Image (cartoon, rainbow, N blue to C red; front, top):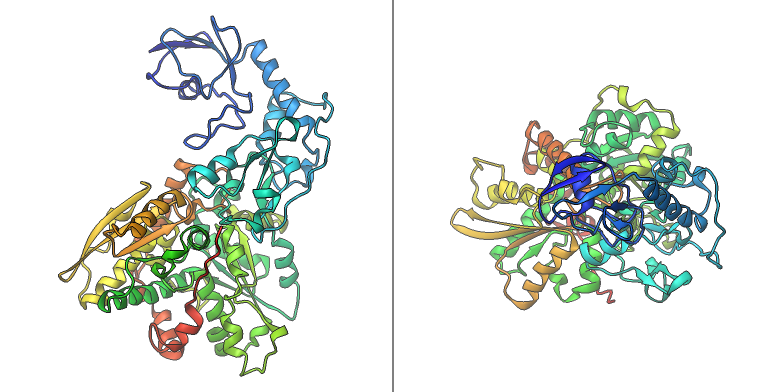
Length: 585
């Protein structure tokens, strides 16, 4: 169809919205509620345009183009309407931009600047001051900063099918809330943080651990070690001003050393360890008629989802802890013994792409190291310490680097410390959806068959489709596997399991779109195109690793020889495996 935009002729496809047509033509139409493939509820009124023949301004995010349509995106009428709509939002919005987490990264702030808003013309209409919700271990909600765009509601209800938050009240009392205003920490929230990732202001943010980590670093009595998840190396560069998907593994290590961490280790080490334990667990279940399909357990948002919504299927979960938690347990037992450091002095910091990891670290069952040392050091219950002490998101790490004045772009490449810094390509791809499955298959095939895998790239489980499946021949034993990302797709596979129709032996589930590289703690913005670039970097690092199978990691082999003895053994059982709970709704 032929249309005009600001007196210029364009050809566009039938079925496009005015906003899509404009952006395709290189004409920016601002919006606060719209997000491609996520939200288009037309609530903010900022995307209005003028169309010849229309009596009113039209909201471009929901209005379809028609042949011959004449559109004006920057007429005086349009600009005045946008400005008034934003000014009305600002009437009830706090003016604390300088101390807000989203300062300089706030869409409302940027839009107000671009529209030339320099004063607050309208009086506040909201009567009561809404207090922040800090009940969650992962997230903080500040209703005063909410502009009711509805993005968070859409991702929670439609992408994740959790429905922990929704609109409540009418008129001036309308707000985003939880069931009976109980707070995120008291409802069936999975802590995934996708709401924080799409929030255009600072109404939902991660619960910061920055001050706690700085305090530990500056405490001479603490030995502060840090572990970095695979997705951080393709995210932290963005947060420090580099192109999307920049692979900055070496710079990341150097930056962490500049912050003062005693040792810089890699969560990939225990990702390899997870695969060995999980691969052997899968083989044990196949050979001994165990509960199948077995489902991965390294995504804490997914774990909380199944505990709340599908507790009857908990036996299908692998008993393996996540790599983050395995690392904490190994660091405070094996590494502590190896170096002669009192485990009570070791402070383990995780840098994760995930807000749910903050919750996971404080789960009461994540204290394997305490019980390992309890009798040896005659510990009392009041001396209880967790395996992981603090969790930083990618965004929080970027704040610390900026606070310290680290010139990240110009850092030289440095290597992880040993022994907990050695990893394989299989561990790196944990950061992308399908990566855990592919890594597990690389090891499970060789352990099960005793043969060398000729082609280790299981490309059938790669990509961004919601659910992907493949068939694997284990020397005559054929198994079907499936990969799902987002909880909406996980729900589909769980419904099959509970209906008794699931054809799969092994299933990977990741909470966030794209897997960990699209986690709720990653840099903002995070969208489909950015996730694809991060995934490309993940697979690039895998392809250029010397070892690409988890069971070939020499340091993990040493860990078994010197400490764990064997996969699924007694020490592994106590330190690396766990159990789950029926949490109900």
